[in-house]
Length: 426
Image (cartoon, rainbow, N blue to C red; front, side):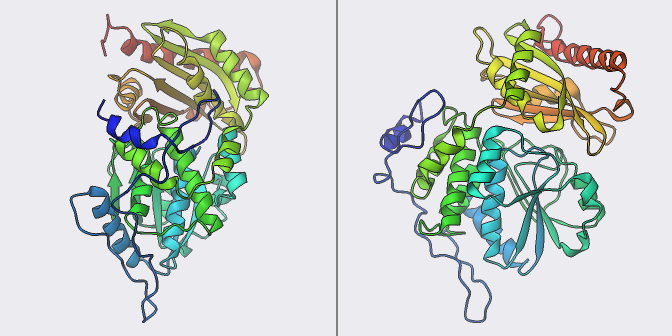
């Protein structure tokens, strides 16, 4: 494999142990990266922040870090909203924090916000143990916010299609300043700074490359820097399936972060226990799954809003079954705060020739505004389908059962059209 030369450099650094007790080792001392020693950004004599650019080269990462520095320089002393997907994962959370620390150098005040909830045990542990500064803004309390006090907004690890907050922010006339993501393009969004690389395994890799280029000099003596580096390592590890799907640039990013992250803290995050409710959803997915042509498809019925992250965990579990290369798990999630219901699903695959983004878009299509109901990246994807007029009314158990049966049948029908090669081969 083309990664062999890079892998040999990673034999002696302990990232952490995963839940199977496996340990990944990298050598902290033997790796030399071309962009490690850069002067930190510091105020110039007139009080403005100076720009320290990395040496010019053919690297897209260096070019983009220079562009981001110039963009931030033009927005000094502003307030920005960093909008994450409704249910942010470690990749999104860590990168948002990295952006906040970078922006602070320009006296840009950022608030990291999401509309959903943190229900995955590792995400909860990540935020609590690192004191990661992310806030939940529901659609209800959004009405009490003065959006006119923000001069720009930022999208990280998403393109707005998975955030309920985006329409309100756009309606307030707040411009999109920065967009950084590693998912396939989801639509037409114009940002002052735009860095979307679908071929990169994690947005954390992109932000670590910015750090390597000198946009922010990490310091092991600064607690925030250590915790942010730990969060980035978790995000990178999470989106590359414990580095098993990592490419050379992901390993190089991990090597850089290894100089700053806290292995014990990361291990504590990864050891967070699954709740009983998550285990119940996994059990339901096992009971309800159908397996056809190496696809495992399972509907898990109704879930509380706070248990939404049980769906991707169930998909992670089902894809490990023998003779299964792709798992899709979905359910109806009820948000009591906003009295809304949405069909939420996750896809996991080990099949190299299956593109989750293409598969989900083809299966479920677009809404009336031309926005896709879902998308994906290498090995994983997800979809959210609002139920609109049919939301609620579940006090009547007969009606609730009929409604679930209709949605369950419709989703299975759309998926099986692609799964069954006799009808529509992939």
